Structures are given as structure tokens and as C-alpha cells.
Amino acid sequence: MVLISCLIPTQPKLVGRQIPCPPPPPPLGGLTVTGALQVTAELAGHCRSMFFSMHSVLDWDSAFVFFRQEKLEQLAARFDRKAGMRETWLSENQRLVSQDNFGYDLAAVEAACKKHEAIETDIFAYEERVQAVVAVAYELEQENYHDIDRINARYWVV
Image 1 (tube, rainbow, N blue to C red):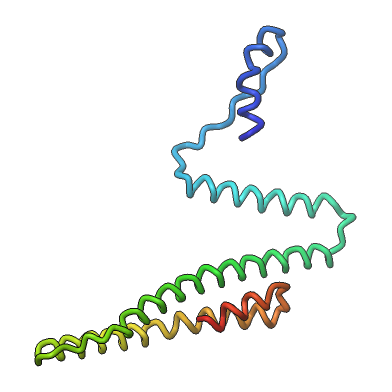
Image 2 (cartoon, one colour; image 1 turned 90 degrees about the vertical axis):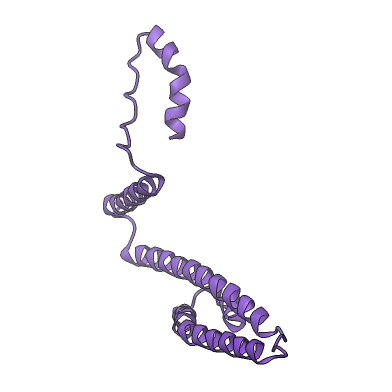
């Protein structure tokens, strides 16, 4: 995109010198930003595979290490994203639990009991999601991820 934007202002100068102008970029065909990013990601994957197929100098071990490291970085990013959501959820629930408004009449006590039951139900529902964060942290540890100390520190917070 940067190359195309650099060529656009110079296009009249090129026409005046009768040098052939490069063709305009193909239209995206109504793609959304997400669709354009997906096309870009697919193109990047294709370029990466073409690079490795054209450069036979690279051995398979270095390619394996590259892809393994890329996989671990993606897994760590997933861990960070999920751990952040779980930390937010935990802090909100801790705030709800720490409130000492039990009520002074029967209706207020019943409302507090219902609130307590709702929090318990929410905790049991979130247990599987927290276990998913634990599983990702365990996988990163088993794969000897280079930043495992940071992952473990955040794991213990969750």
C-alpha cells in the first residue's frame, strides 16, 4: 500500500515523460476490514511458504524452529488475552462478594441470598474457562516457552 501511495503523486510526471505507469491496484471488491486482514494473512502465509520452497539453503530444522516459535508466540498471546478477561471477571466478582449489604429485613436477606446463588452459579460456569487458561499455561511450560516466568506469574494471579 505504501508503494502505491508513493507512486500516485508521481504518476503525472511519469505520463509526461512517456514512461509506462504501473497499473492501479485491484479493487477489494467490497471487502470489510476483517476480510481484507484475512486476505492479507493468507497472502503472508503463501509468501512465507513460497520463500521456504524457493530457498533450499534453509534446512528443515531452522524452519521447524521458526514455526514452533511462531506457534508459541500465538499461544502466549492467546494466554494473555484469556488471562486478562479472567482477571477482569475475578476483580468484578471480588467486588460483589466484598459488599456487606446483607439487609435488615426479610426481603433484603432473600435478595442477598439470591445474589449469592447467582454468584455461585457464575463461578461454577467460569470454572471451565479458568481451566482453559491453566491448560494454555501448562502447554507453554511444557514447550519451554522463553517467557515462561511472566506466564507463570500471571497464571498464579488467575
